[in-house]
Image 1 (cartoon, protein in one colour):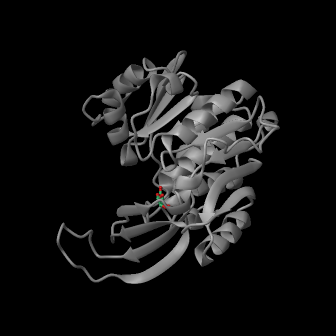
Image 2 (cartoon, helix red, strand yellow):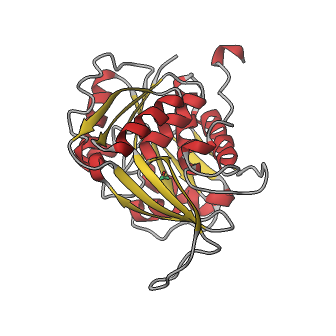
Length: 304
Ligand code: RIB
């Protein structure tokens, strides 16, 4: 069984609840400010650990109080934080509003996440076949490109969640095993309109595979997700497990648990299903990683 290694961001999520999301220029009163672990990288690492994978996080926090508490919080999810560096700057911060129907807006200050360099994986000298490297768009594109090259050289698989989306080279995509994008990111990456239905998303997934990745997963919010690879494709509906409290980090839960399932030896179709269940579980609780403790671990592949 391989490990999940996440190179990515870790943020202090400062979240305020509002009745509805503000319009440009509007001042709204909120309530219940919370300070929690976030960052797409840290969230995905926490989810992978709850999904049952041995998980290592590679990233950076600032030399401030947030950095120290986030390190402890990530470790409390079962993630190895030995490669979480202290940088001489501020910790990444996300300013989040969550509306009564669970939708959110997020404004980011990258802080220490900008210090995660192209040498990020140098200290992970036992990266190998069976391991799954997970990347997102909240560290520098050059950092991701170097990590993809290191994983490819070591025979590890690569999951690239292009969120936030950036202009990624085809030479990088050619070494990616699973490209994960939402509908907006899919449209921007393909240079086409965002898909509005699972069928349109399947068509766009085929276009994206043409840019180089071995497989593509497009998430569609309440419409579930679609995946495609050289052997086939499929659509996975979102599960309604109860009232939606907070969608923050639900996509990260899906990516982390999908990576855990891939590391456990499951095929992509099964891994996507496990990820969708985790994402549907995560929306039932407040916050990002704080909502992951209810996620069920992926069963060992040998038990099937
Ligand atoms: O995907 C959710 C995450 O995006 C939040 O935790 C926030 O930190 C931003 O990175």
